[in-house]
Amino acid sequence: MISPMIVLGIESTCDETACALVRNGKEILSNVVSSQINLHNQYGGVVPELACRRHVEILIPVLEEALTLAQIPLSQVDLVAVANGPGLVGALLIGLNAAKALSLALDKPFIGVNHVEAHLHATWMSHSDKIDFPALGVVLSGGHTSIMTLPKLGEYHVVSQTVDDAIGEAFDKVAKMLQLPYPGGPPIEKLAAIGNPHRYPFRAGQVKGQPLHFSFSGLKTAVLYAIKDQKLTEINPADLAASFQEAAFSDVIKKTCLAAEQFQCAKILFGGGVTNNQHLRKMFAERAPHLSLYWPSLGLSLDNAAMIAGLGYFKYQGKSDPYDLEAFTRKDEGIGKG
Ligand code: KG4
Ligand code: ZN
Image 1 (cartoon, rainbow, N blue to C red):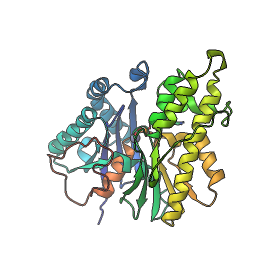
Image 2: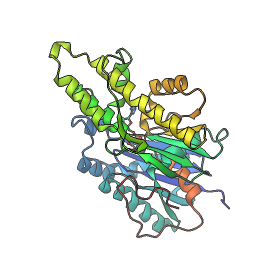
Image 3: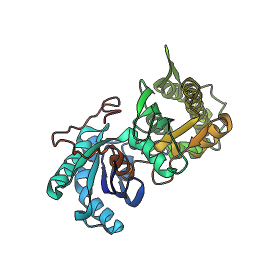
Image 4: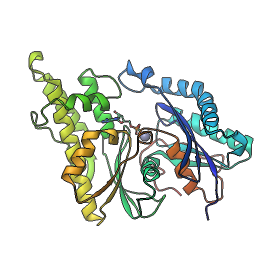
């Protein structure tokens, strides 16, 4: 039995420091995200040491802003939910230890939440009146690419994932090759819009004996060689971006359709930053009209703490997690926990 609750969510898995207050699992009272993009942009990717330092500096101001915007005093928080993985270990520990300290100081329970699962929960929060279960989940983010089955609200089972690079990571690396800023997804999407998606015959990798698994490392390398093989004057960045994007998204659509068939499920929830890509949404709608597609709303697609608070509410079963709860860094650890 789930009781009315105000949940404080904390997110610090990578390069966003975020706090949110959510009432009863889906009513977002505040959702504050402090992005470190400007800090890491000059390096073309996230520098873990810098990310950790910034989390330490900014977490308390972000928390204060979230409380102020929600007009909720800290004493009214009933539960502290924190993303305890997967992510960068140092970054995770900052959010996790803050959550434990708050829980102790407030004498309120705390709960660890899986960040990847929370990305899918964000989509349920965006359309909670329309989505029922079972459903399938597709996570496309900077650190993760996976397909999951969702038998019921709050339950996740991993069906497949990437065996090398995540799809967002491939976008970020290809952007770097094309001298575009970090994160690479938005500039690639923009450039691809004026390019020819069929100029280069790129293809995403297929994993032997695992038709639903993903592999983007070979695709990324193919782009690199296409750049190297051409004279500087012949390189057309827009065609490269469009052809790369076409190959990556065609593969995701193919494998999602296959999973839908295999699990006899036409309801697909998408999560993660790459799902911000409007071209992806258009391609899916055109190529998979038989599926019901649910995308996260703006503000819930990139890393945020509202999705952590929202999922924490449903994971909490009246018992606090122990104070020795650890952070987990790997993609497959902790999935389906609780
Ligand atoms: O979910 P997210 O905020 O963080 C992780 O959990 O990893 O996703 C960030 C990723 C980055 O790799 C970024 O390049 C990608 O999402 N991304 C996009 C777009 N917007 C963000 N990729 C493709 N197209 C976009 N419009
Ligand atoms: Zn994420």
